[in-house]
Amino acid sequence: MSPLVAPSILSADFANLAAEIKRAEDGLADWLHVDVMDGHFVPNLTIGPPVVKSIRANTRLPLDVHLMIENPDRYLNDFAEAGSNHLIVHAEACVHLQRTLSQIHRLGMKSGVALNPATPPDCLSYVIDDLDIVLVMSVNPGFGGQRFIPAVVSKIETIRSMLDKAGRSDVLISVDGGINVESGRLVTAAGANVLIAGNSVYSAPNISAAIKALRDLSATTSSV
Ligand code: DX5
Ligand code: ZN
Image 1: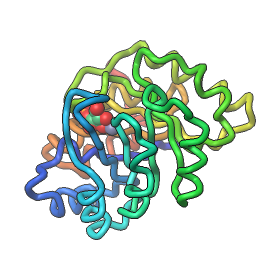
Image 2: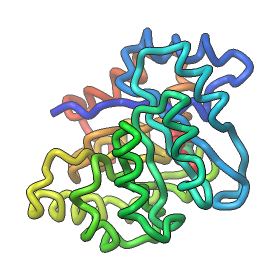
Image 3: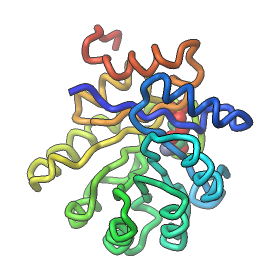
């Protein structure tokens, strides 16, 4: 199965966001990945619900909203009303993770848990029934353009096998950080279904070709 490709607008030109979203759409992106940062959970600040609402008005692509914020419970409703399709919270930021995931479902969105590179996958065991997406961070969150951390490949294999054993093979594993054709090939071979890519898509001379290269990577030969 070809992976889905979700360009991350963190690497787009924020002054021309509508045009940048259209470039991803025309390039046949599957989802649009939206990074929300609060300057506390991660050392960077980005956007909040008003901008997500404006993005919603400019695209029909599913919005995969990645909350890198403390106390995400406080904002679930706002991101639902802004038109998010998937709401991804960090396990490290949620004291009552199961409650947060069920609330995301109650608000009509798909729910996801993100894990930082050093976070073991065990915390997923008791919330598997409440999940639609596991987002594996392959860099420490906060910035685009960082280098892929290869240690996450075995974590993806572990999560895929946990999900299969629990009868939840339908749960998607997305991978975020330093994704290009080489790392994309490693993570899809390990069981990932969705490639989130900022820099490798938005800095490419031809965005459609960059998205296609990620989607078709199993058909190309490895240089790793
Ligand atoms: C990083 C963000 C990523 C980022 C990925 O904290 O969560 O979504 O945009 O960017 P690249 O693909 O450039 O590593
Ligand atoms: Zn992200």
